[in-house]
Image 1 (tube, helix red, strand yellow):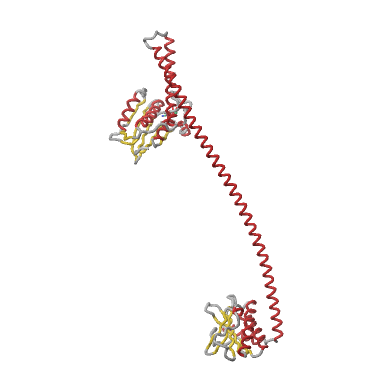
Image 2 (cartoon, rainbow, N blue to C red; image 1 turned 135 degrees about the horizontal axis):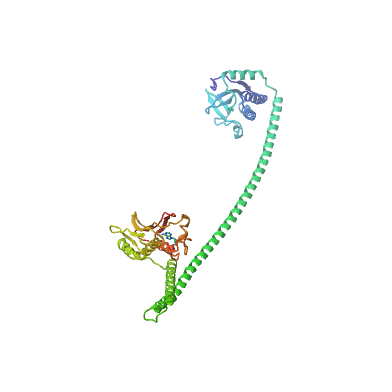
Length: 453
Ligand code: ADP
């Protein structure tokens, strides 16, 4: 069987005189070539053999050398050379040569096989070499038997050639290494430049972002200041206007009083006109004042437990006076049981009155309806009407100050009611939304948290 120590060696030879060292070296290389070791490995094992042979010749006077092919524990084939000294080795701990030799082969050891001490070395056969079947081994033996060992001079020439080859290889490897190093340094420089460029760009971007944020902060501060001064202006102007307007209304009333001198019919008509215009103006001024107060945060909701039933009852009472059209019915769906929520009763009343008032103003026939329902932890108030409806693209605009839908039947108003209502609902912690389309009426929905803002 291949690999058994007892198997027939591939080649055997004797080491007795100095010249045999050259022969062993040469034959070793040939055996290595025959079993498929690569050129470098052939030189390595041949060098290791000649070094160990030289040592054994000096210390023991010679050895019997044999070559074998083993299957190793790693499942691969190994070329093994055994050198059995002709006399005992100097001592038990004999280590063949220095570590330099052991680096040339895969294993190097002193073993005792069947009572005979041998110096044994091996080198792995590459995986791509043909498997050494018994037939192939027989062929190897024949092949090796055909070639006769050359002279010491021949082997020296070969050895010189190998040395020159090895030197050339070392030189070309060194050159290659230098080129690789240069390429590496070049790449490093490139990477460093890229890194610097990226860092710079990043810093540039950062500076831009920081500047942008500063600008944004400044803009929003300006916006806040502008909005505050608008509210302050509205509040001041409205306040200043209220007194003279109230005076005009009062004086008008005095003029038409029965205790005053009678006016001509024309004068009476004109004074009535002055009084009704002044009343419109006072309404506008009051609404402006309300809105300015709500916007400047001067309205603080007073939250309390509110029962919706009396609130709804009161709304029905006050709005009956506004619902003058016989074709329009005002329906207030009063809750049947106690309907409690925590909110500001006055502000909620203002919002609902405002929405119902709008419904009655803009609806020519049909109904205006108020209903409330509790949904989880929220209350929903719906004010719906069968009026003209509002185009979807105007749903946001009608909540802007002074906006009134153009072309709608002029029914009076200021365009301040809805923005004020939305402001109040927000203060109460809720939302005011709208569902409407032209010809389909409108439904304004107030949604409030049951537990208060
Ligand atoms: P005002 O009612 O004083 O004009 P609002 O802010 O309350 O001001 O309403 C703004 C505009 O929205 C109204 O002028 C009207 O064009 C429209 N609008 C409000 N409520 C309704 C409604 N129920 N149906 C149709 N249009 C409405």
